[in-house]
Image 1 (cartoon, rainbow, N blue to C red):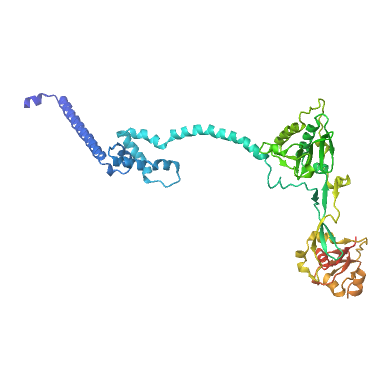
Image 2: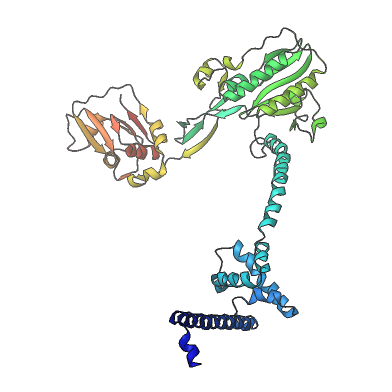
Length: 457
């Protein structure tokens, strides 16, 4: 034995020792690997010890109790995805650990994850919804157009054919007993005047419909104060009139035949003035103009159109004009004071204080009531005087002038040629004051006590 060991070369001995070392290291590695596998198997055999992955590992368990647990824990998953702002559980923070373990042991768990997110199902549901919604919108479009044609109950139906219109500026007058009142001037406008002052769109509608009516053979028109009539011989076919701010077409058709149709009409058969043309149709848009032509064709009852009819731009013949030129052309009548609606603004008071006049009388009324005389002011020497001084030195119903002030008011400059009246204190007299200028509050004090302020030029 000793001889054999000594006969082995040193190099071979080193190889043997190295091989033994490799075998020992390999054995240790195999033992460590087996130990790790055993530990993992032991860990997978105890699911209760890993609460993070309990819900997914329980899917492989055949026990019914575990299946119920899986269903209960799977339900919150889509809620967490749909509501990112809601409260999240700590399980979501450790989800990568759970997926990494299942990727080694149960590849089915990875396949189930997209099913919980329901991404394919959502896509399949959205694809057919879009064409259905488009069809619904297309079906609703005609209904929307019909709604636009329906008259507004608050505006259109309340638009009466009022022949009068209140003037933009109210006038103020004094009655014989000293009362001051507004006089509300009203204008009675003709159909032509209303067209002239209406919107350009109304004029275009009027021109279109007038051309359409006159294009039929034998049809003529005549304009009266309230409307324009279209007729042939003794037969009246239509009328055009203004109601409020809208152009209206009246036709010799029975309104009962057009109830619940696309033509939104009004029945005027009970009004004597519309006995011949009881169907009223408001012209509000281009669609109404188109429908009006259909109604006109019906009322003409087969009457042929003129072959060589040339259309006229009637809208161009109706440029806008102010009220005064229309009054001069007698297209607008101004109501007299007796016919106008009037009302008391204030009654004379026994006394008034300067501090309260602005609350009792408006500026525009006071300005309107200051009379202007033919006397001319002399600005050589200007002075002022307060209303309460006039109340002290003058009696009720007296006339106050610069000459009388010089006579009655002590220490008033005798060389004064121009006087301005200012408000102060209290006035308890009804006076007619002739002065060169007034403060508005002073004029109000004189007016409120029944007096009359007169201003020189």
